[in-house]
Length: 133
Length: 483
Image (cartoon, rainbow over all chains, first blue to last red; front, side, top):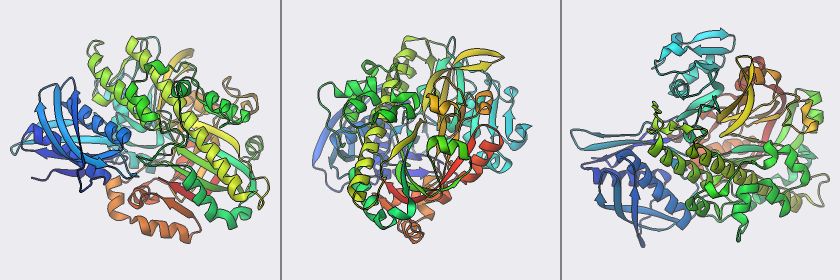
């Protein structure tokens, strides 16, 4: 199963992430975010603990990805390995690994709710996400 | 998906989706376009997103699509609609993440031929002095209450600190200061994102461009704006950076939590809305105003660096390189305005996403010297092609809540542009045509390729023929600076 695929969107970026379970889905969605920015770094030199909440599963996904963008921008870091340690209906705890970033020139402004779908398929889970660039 | 035959042709350039098209519509939806631009809009979800905005509680008259409409998220890019302030809603997602993204045009008194020998140095100086990209510090260090002060006072702060000239302010929409801005409604996270971003360009479709005026179409308006053929001008396109993005993110999230309490049912969660008069609605209004002030200050600081770059490179070589401000115009805002609704002047909240104000002559909010010609409307085209300066008209006030288009409008996805266009080849092509290019990312450049956009001249022709704008000048690029 691929981690994600890029989808066509006229103005912004969109992707579909896959996972055998919800944890993996959330991890792969985070991976897709940084892969699309071309910001993946081979080395992991630092670790961060993340906790986010959301009113439902979709909100949780948006808030998880948004938190990563917030950290990327304010801490000047990028992440490439994501371990969700706890995933409940409305909260999530994760450990992420990454590195200090060189300035990057292609970045995502925000994660939107537009066309956001988290669905269960025969193979596992899929999430469609549109991001503003 | 909506088909062409679902739209009624109201006039040569106006197409309407009747209210009956979908049960949840509260008003019709109208698009200003010729047949080709309408066909473009029907290839993606633009019109469906437009129809979604027509379901928002309190919407008046009709939802509007400008001829440069394209698919976005929530509201389409190039979408305008107004809700009654009395009983209508405000939607942060319909304003967008880059709050008060906008365009500023500065003009010199120099002829294009005079700066030609210095163009390479100018482009390099602008690229160096106007930082872009994530992980790049801003060009202004902020201390103590500076950020709160900027959020509350916008361009007034930049004037106090020497980044603005007094004459810049009347040539900025709202004089560069949103009076109802409230820094207290901006989260700590948003402030953290903004603290080192003042005076930065950002990425995506943001740019600085040195242009020459290729043609004047309206001599009288050009005289008032001090524009002439072959004049060197500079365009800046950028917004409120991470601070604005976080404000939108915070309120979209918060509104998700309260939307049910207000019994608001929407076809797209990104359009999430709350009553304008509710505590949540008013908190967002204050935060949006603050983010808008940050964007005004950001463009003002960039203008300062551009003036400094011109002085550094041209002093001793060229006279009259001083840049005066032609205008600064906002996209991505919701503003309380009075418009004619059912033959009565009504207070409404006009949401403009990827669209601009275009107030006609004698509008009371314009400075006296612009009252005779109407508000300048600055319309950048796709990279390496052409841009336009227009003025608002009585027609825009009557038809589109005093609004106009904001650019060319995309037709290709970024994904397709990246696949079909090579950034290095595109740069070489532009350089062969004499355009200097400075870009941080070649694939970012490819995504902004002119093939990915509509023909801006067609877009502005529809605007003029439909009577919602009047063409004043056409600009052609000499140098493009991108993140």
